[in-house]
Every structure is written in structure tokens, then in C-alpha cells.
Image (cartoon, rainbow, N blue to C red; front, top):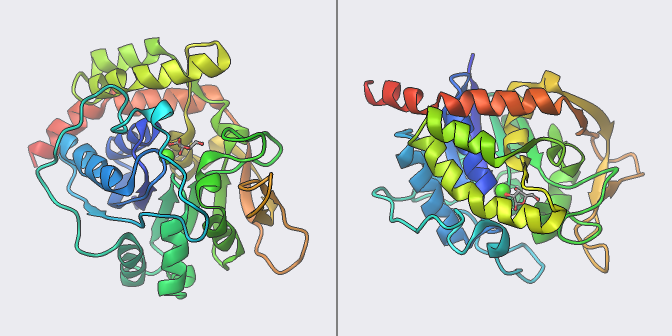
Amino acid sequence: MKHKIIIDTDPGIDDAMAIHMAFADERIDVVGLTSIFGNVTTDRSTRNALRLAEMAHYPTIIAPGEATPLIRKPEPPADFVHGAEGFGRVPAASPLGTADRRSAAQFLCESCAAAPGEITICAVGPLTNLAVALSLDPQIVHNVKTIVIMGGSFAYHGNVTNYAEANIWNDPDAADRVFAADWDVTMVGLDVTERTQCTPDDFAFLSSRSPHIGGFLNEASNFYFDFHQSKTGIRSCFMHDPSAILAITDAHLFGFEMVSMAVVCQGEEIGRTRLYKEQDRRPVKVAMSVDNLAAREKFLGLVANADSIVEKRKAG
Ligand code: BDR
Ligand code: CA
């Protein structure tokens, strides 16, 4: 049985890495992509999601998400990490197709209701669409198979502030509602995503093996390497969003702890994910360790093969 996944995303360079890896993985059926603000505005995120699907000739639904957080004032997009258009210095291009008429939240609710217990939602951006889906159809907690998020940190620092990771920080109220709901949640946070890293040589390898998809990621990742190098002094990048997909397909690569989680929604520590000490929240499966070399190998192996999978899809 394939993993049926909807990826809730703000593409975004590492989002593009995750999505192309998922498109190239024959163990996965990407049922749809839902867009959200974060790395870029929601409009650009929808456009970029359409473009990624078209680039890979992957037939999937793209549903446009919320434009602003639930409560907090919107923060500017992270253009210093992902570039103004989302894919580094790769120029913007208009996709041929159009987005679904349904909102992301409607699409999430309807898809899960139509296939109860089958769909995993992998959220690799701020969690606003998931929070809106919870209000729209509370039954989604029973209809979804599981939620896997890239976001937060537990025994670790933040990446936007000392406390907060970007996806949670962009909409802390939404994230807190996601942790409070009675559904199965896995959190793949900075505790593990910063441990798996790739280098420019890795992307040059992908470009040589799969010039179309790997070549695009190689070009886009240059800007991402600039950002990481300015932060860490090393030209290697963190594999945030691909780690969340790997936690679905290759969960054995990770070590998890069961912890109830809450999010700080105000003040200096806004966006911090923290231990929730009361008994009325279902524990979250928090990824605390990763076989980072194996995770990197898995990513490289799948994306190296991406062009041949595209050709196979085109041939029908
Ligand atoms: C997360 O924030 C975004 O910049 C990345 O795409 C990733 O989802 C990392 O903190
Ligand atoms: Ca992302």
C-alpha cells in the first residue's frame, strides 16, 4: 500500500526538495499540495506548488491556503532564506494550470472524509490551514490517518528567535490548536532536521544524475547555501522539510519520544514549542534522534532517480 499524502507547504527551497523527493518516491501517492504563507506569500506559494507539480508531470491537486495567521500579525516572507520568489535566484515562471476551487482547509477535510484513515497530512509550513480545517470539520481528527509536521524544537534552540522555529513562529495559535486536537501528531523539529545536511557537491551530483529535477534543485539551492553559510560559516544546508517526508516513509531512521506539547502564543518566547504538563492533551510523537547519514543517502538516492520517474510517468 502506498502512503497517501497531502503536503501542506510554503515552497520554498527545502519544500521543493521535499516535494520532488516525494514525487520521485514510488512508495508515495501525493494526493494534493495545499499552500500556505511563510517562505513566500500564499499566492506565490500556490504558484510555486503548481510549478513543482508541472515540472515533475505529477498529476495532483493544488488547493490554495490561508493568506494570514489566525491571530498574530503576519510577518514578512523569509525572502532572505528562499529568495523573493521562493526558489532562490531561479526566476519566477507562470504555471500552465490553475489551483483547485476549494480552499486548502476544505480540500483537507473533504479528502480525509472521502478516504477515512488513509491520508497522512504532512505540514511543512505554518499550521494555519490545519487549524482552519479543525474548525471547518472537527471530524477530520477521526478521518485523517496521521499528521506529520516539520516544525518546532524540543531540547533545542529556535531558528527565528532563540526560542522559536519558523513554521511555528509564523502562526503559534494555529500550532497550539494542532497540538491540542485529538489526532495522531508527529513533530519533526529542529532537534533532527538540522542534523541532516547536504552540500553543494550533493546537489551537483543530483544535477548530473537528473538534470531536469536535480538541476533545478541545484540551481535553487545556491541561495539556500548562501544563507546557511552566513549563519554557520559552513556551506551545507539543513534538510528540514525532506526530513518530515522521510519520517513517514522511513520512520525507522528516527527515534521518537511521546510528549504532550503546547506553544507559547505571546511575549518574548512566542512560537516556542514546550512541554504541556496537564493531562488533557494527547501526547505527540517528537523526533529526537535521526540516522542522519542514512536520511541524506535516502534523499540523494530518490532525487537522483527523479528524471527517470518523470519519464516513466510521461510514458503513462
Ligand atoms: C522551516 O521554515 C521554512 O523556512 C522551511 O521551509 C522549513 O519548513 C524550517 O524552520
Ligand atoms: Ca517549508
